[in-house]
Image (cartoon, rainbow, N blue to C red; front, side):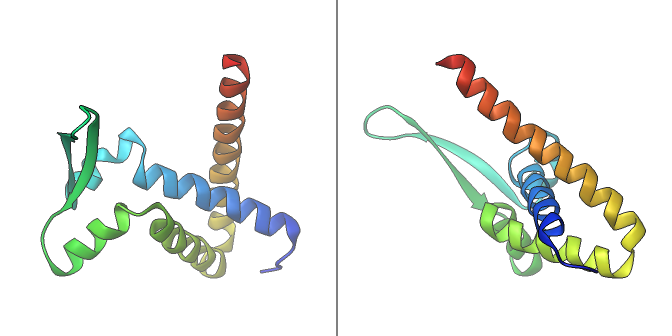
Length: 118
């Protein structure tokens, strides 16, 4: 694998998208629910606070902690994509490209939405 600027940008965008997919996106909620649950409570000011309760022990708790932490998940996603690039480079290139395009599209959508709200 050749590491150059384009590779870093593509991997960064791919990791960004994959981590967000796992930690935040609704489509992955059923997977996350196996490892943690979200609880809501009102604070003293009446604001609703959402917090995560990790389920189980051992590996299940580890995965629950991982899926509750965007930064932690990002590190593991980076490792996964780099490993894929090393082991199955042809398939990994397409996966990384797909995730990178989706990640960039998400960033653009967020920026445009904020721009239109102003």
